[in-house]
Length: 348
Image (cartoon, rainbow, N blue to C red; front, side, top):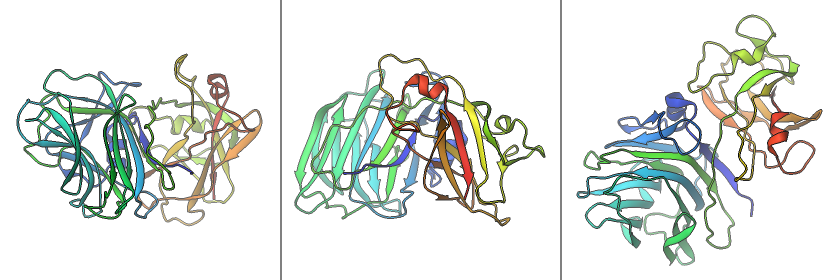
């Protein structure tokens, strides 16, 4: 089984990234907050009637996935069911699989459409704490499943008919979807990711992930792209936005097979967690001016480049990424490797 990453974010690019990831806002846009993040500096924040809808970037419906995130939330202690996370259709109203918090019952409830698949006593009426949640789903009329994990322990599990709401889904929905759904101290989320697990043979614990931000801080081996300042000198200074995105300074290319690369700041010191991937990503656009309309993203280490497949650029600014689970030349990533790695982009 090959797992395909559809989305990951630690919300470090602040509100602009949030809106780029969740462009289909229902009612009021969620925001970011810079105090109390579980990982790094920023977190996603939802209040009543704030809902973000993220569409599968592969452009097709799927029937299997897993969702992981750290959650910090508090409620009034009484009232409606409050949507935490769900899977649905692009009409933004059809709910296929949904995890709700029931304030009156002080517990979690998992649904397939309108059918309850199970509950778990979990009181959120007291001051919140960071907790890791995982949801593993397969939609099938007979051999489906839907499981919820908290800190790696299964708390809700269902096997059987899970297509009461529909046979597949193409959007991830995060946050309360009605004005009466009220997180008194807000619902905060960090380290959110969504994976396509098509072909998974059985439900599995959803791994805990943490996403750290590493920004460009120097020139790399390549300097072919043109900067918005009119030259190809110190291009890293034009793309090193930190906790906020700018489109007033940038690099661009109108010629195929041009490379630009940038040295990276030191990786965070972490003796507990294992590095599972390095994920170079860019905020980019095909401006329609002619020339290449795709980009290849990768890394360079020890004189070896590891480039991903060509990715078509969006016609409005969007986030494009390449997840690399092995380093250039092969093998697992280490902190020392990252400290010597360059981010590489190629016009294609």
